[in-house]
Image (cartoon, rainbow, N blue to C red):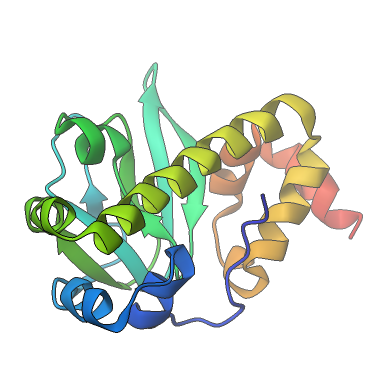
Length: 196
């Protein structure tokens, strides 16, 4: 599963919706009506571990890190770039607190959707319900892809894939965050970067 951004630093709402699954015009208009543009400052938690998230977000501009706490340290699971979904699957699927924190790495603009309103559309509109199913499938596949990468790819391969997703943005992320994501030390990351 390839996880590339568009290479731009901004992603509009209609493009984000249609990338997940194409919708008929009427369904597209109803779903688009739920999108609310919101802004977050640098290092602001958008989704907080241990709390139920009542929204899902689609990144318009900026970047975020997805992490959890393990024994007094932060372990980075992933990064999010324009066009990516910011979601706690546990909250989205089960209505329960999530395990991860999603924090902005820089000022971020995102589109926010209230999950209760979205669930109402799912109950009343087959096209949007199918779109929601596809969204959950895509996010589940991202988790599987992360797991497979951790198990079978080298840190060098994983770093290259991260660069391929958003090269301009990755170069602005703290090395410690990237090293945590790759599961290596900053010294090893510096060696990998030095070979480029």
